[in-house]
Image (cartoon, rainbow over all chains, first blue to last red; front, side, top):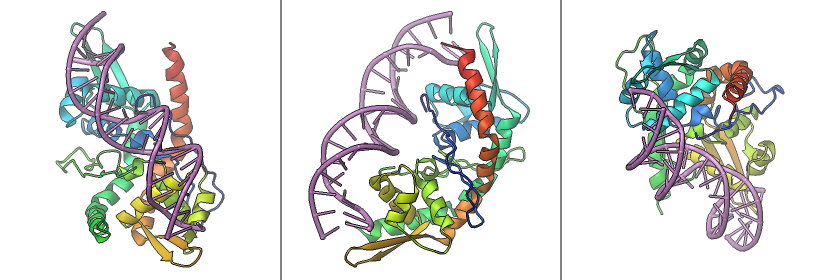
Length: 135
Length: 135
DNA sequence: CGGAATCCAGTAGGATACTG
DNA sequence: CAGTATCCTACTGGATTCCG
């Protein structure tokens, strides 16, 4: 993350053999980083309910304050997450998915379930490959 | 890339509100890197036809020899791409998608088309966000 | 509480040169 | 041709400290 530029949509249509264009660099850049999707997911799990920064931090295992802040900022910038700031003392900030955000999450269903089904096979392939060429 | 470890499937089911588990870190790690998906896509465009290393390099704009090699090795290790080596002089190496590889590519359709539809809106959001808070 | 600012290590990935 | 092998740099992301 850290001031990512990302997501240039390269590739033009130019008729493949039944295949569509394709997203370029790392699917979309933002989707490739370590925390973004997890943040989106935890927000979606909350449903209509907004989540506070600290709640998110507690739920997302292993994330640091810094990384959560960066992930949220980027998502807010993209319009995938909405941020509500309440200037109280102590301050309170709540986050929720935008429609666009939950739309993106739904669009991830396909690759998500594919991964759930195939991860163990991939890991097996890696094991085989790794000790095949030993050295 | 460069000896990525990746793809630990964190997150357990634990009934959400209509949402499924979710892939962890950067979707799958491999999907998050810069070239992997592009390599898969160009291979799929070739259909049944295998592609040589140099053909891939020519088609994928901007990729270096090193990065193409790394991407292909990782994909081969995962079982997403098959490598055929012909010990001739000069050597010839051909690559093709495995069934698993094209399965993954199909699974990417959802997020792919979502991105095609929404990228411009995201970019617009970024522009707005960026010069809103000036500085 | 919810960050912002620093500092710092590891690594992705580009450029270039060499080789079987 | 299809890679290795180096070198090098920028960026990711963790830890820690400070602030309104």
